[in-house]
Image (tube, rainbow, N blue to C red; front, side, top):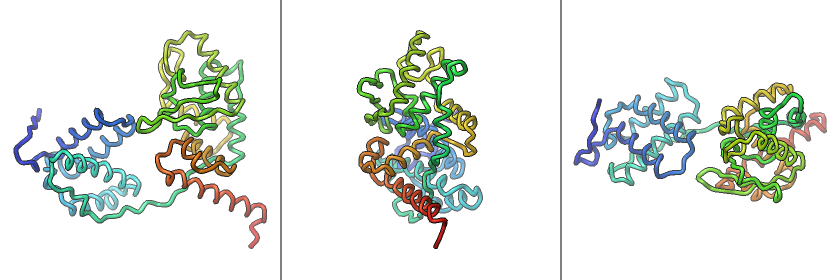
Length: 312
């Protein structure tokens, strides 16, 4: 097995060791999700295969980085979003290495290479699909059972609050307050926020689900669990939503993030101040929330075109 040691020359650390040390740092010193850590590992593994595992990080220059971009774009034919993410992960390694004084120069500082991302507006459900999905969320007591009630409650919570699917599965019993109609959400970067449950139908669903849950004597702090008490996973929620949307007759591929977009768009179209929307969604920057104003404008234009019959 290969043994790696630190040498006196600060530029001598090889890429493999630098990536390993960086990931170790992220795992211990940063509040990153498992999804983010997996993305870092995948991105950095790709970079190591291209540059070579034994490439000294101090010898990395801007021209090889340009060649790496060309390789990903022309030979691998990766999407610009993927290229941007993979470069961002590698850039973080060098930023960390500079801070740790493992390199004397960051090649990204002189890299003048812009990745142009396509302008894509968030996808949201239209009113017909929303209605169909809400109808499918109705409990069928003889058919649903505990699992059906759990899944429909979880999906209804996504649809009415706009929380992320990762935030949904992290909710604990102590986070829910039916008296205050609110739930504490543990968001990105370990930031907490309060979201509200003003919808009577959602409150009723949560009460019925909690009654089911308590009848099974489940020993778990998590809100949404299996019958054995294990917390449900994000892939399980995605699969349940996909099945429910299909049963509702929705032809589009529906994802939890699409429900988040739908919720945000509805709030803005209803006149809710964008600062409130930012706070409810847990966006760190208002610029992230502003993209939904474009979605609302687009919906307005489409509605106007339908109302006028497309007249010029």
